[in-house]
View 1 (cartoon, one colour):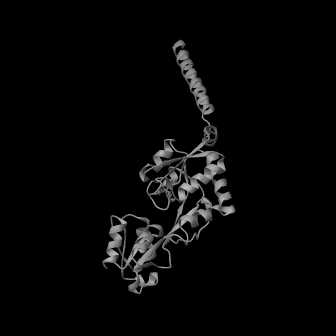
View 2: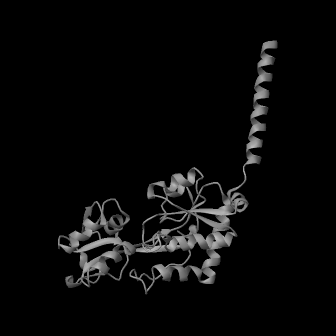
View 3: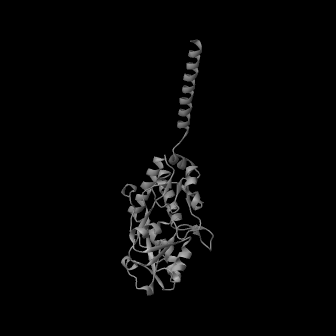
Amino acid sequence: MFTTFKTISRQALGCCLLVALSGVATTAHANRLEEIKSRGRLVCATLSGTEPLAFQDPRTRQYVGFDIDLCNALAKRLGVTLEHKPIAVEARIPELSLGRVDVVAAAMGYTKERATRIAYSDIHYQLPIKIVVSNSSGIKTFADLAGKKISANKGSTPETFTRERIPSAEVVTYQDSSTAFLALAQGKVQGLAIGQAAGARFVDQGEGKFRFLDESLFFEPTGLGIKKGEPELLDAVNKALHLMEDSGQLDVMWNKWYGPSTKFKIPREKKLTPLSDL
């Protein structure tokens, strides 16, 4: 009986210590928004060589781009300075999970799988996925591609939506966009499925030989990535984005990097969209 009592007492003491330590840990953990304001800096990550999102100006070697401007604007809305951190595509989610960055603005296209690992802000832009064709092909609509061959990156979103939207076409996949475009240029395929921003480079370099079809396969929603479990920061980021939208600031940034006066010539057809509307 005495032994049993001692065992129970030890177990009870252990539980009390665990609860106490948990309480200390919880108290010691400040939410991320408080931490950002305390340090006076927002650590915002972008890609490092993706024009026009984030890339080095060849003259100044400074990072510029849509995502850089967005990070700067977000930091100002939060009342802090910006600490920019260039990262690789594969590092985006790990950097958030490990707490090395506060926000990721790096072509974070929304997917249900990613949303299980990170929190997304509201969707601040949606880039269209398009079909590029030869000007001499006579192809004007998706219907004209019935029975034709369309190239796409293997495993890409453009491949998926080409199969869904133009099921009567044959999709031929390649390992990269340059090879997929070369197939179009050589006449091996009659269309190229690609994001409009990436495809604009090929259309621009094609010296008038290629163009986008007017129709879009899909609009890929993109938001800012935030570590899960930080509702205060997520709310502050969304409020900042809505203020940028309401003031026209997001449109100004978009037109600067993607708009009619740029080589991309992509209109901002989709405005800020609540995540719940997807």
